[in-house]
Length: 160
Image (cartoon, rainbow, N blue to C red; front, side, top):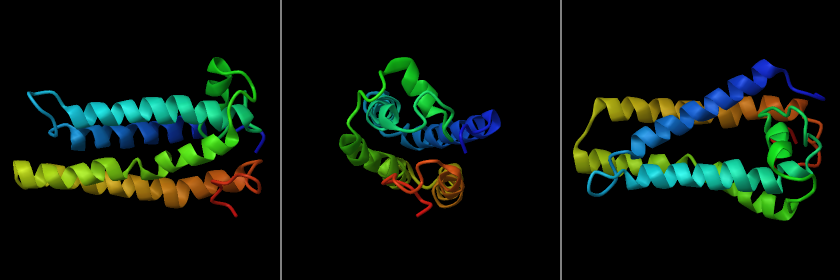
């Protein structure tokens, strides 16, 4: 696909925000003095690594720079960074953060239930969080990658 449709970009970004919000909810009880330290740390990781560093190092050197990729990140990157201003090798290393990001709330939910006591609500949120992550990585990502112009040369492509 040369440019992904607006509804695809919107759908995939909304899914990410829902997943991240559920992650924040799962981490919220882990804090000190009423300050949700784990949730704040998770938000900072998302902002710094996903919204800044990945865009800088992956998206500025991508075919979709200033175009609508499946997440719209090519357009986002063009707003904030010059073309080819990133380092693709650094971007490939940083992409690991994207893959391990779900593990942060997952590893936080278990201590929450041990510390605060079992909660059906926490268990339900955890199950929904896991289901959405599996859907995103196993199904949606593959569909996006199969339509991508970079599917054969992208280190993170699920279409190979």
